[in-house]
Image 1 (tube, rainbow, N blue to C red):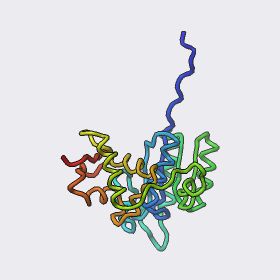
Image 2 (image 1 turned 120 degrees about the horizontal axis):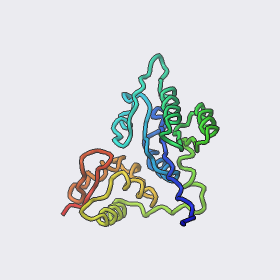
Image 3 (image 1 turned 180 degrees about the vertical axis):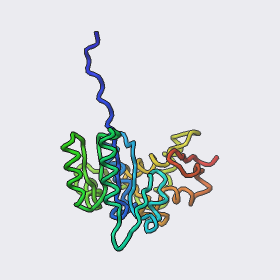
Image 4 (image 1 turned 90 degrees about the vertical axis):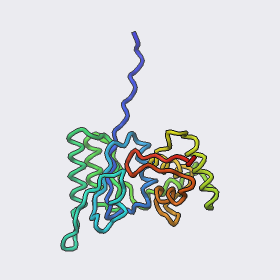
Length: 213
């Protein structure tokens, strides 16, 4: 009889972002931190999408449009309702709330009381690991040529199947390469600015990039 313990199930992570309060430029670090807690199975961004075109065009996330009325928006309430819904339906056991708004702290505390793992990430804490950790990886060499060489090597390693664009962004960030600091701002825009080098699938959560033959 095999008495070895059963493998622990991978935690299902709900990543919920207050798009009115958190910039899309911070997404790579948030994705990296959330992925360390388990498998991200739910991605939602809440906000007035008419005011945040960058979030509205983020294909990896379901954008929940919350119109601003009389100087107030409904994003906070929509995020809380969604979090409670996912909790009570058992769709996630770990919750990452992304916002600088401390009004979400009671929600995080409630999630923990229910036996879930929960944390709130703001703009400052999203970059705290890189700033304060003694084991943080050093920045890769700056410059267009160095970045292009690094990305080409990573994509080449994926062969004809191609490298998932979403995972590529996370992998680059782990190596200290932040595409959001480039003039193109997004990884897809950066890749497509080299049409002679990269061939990208149409937009979508499973889109891949390959080297041009």
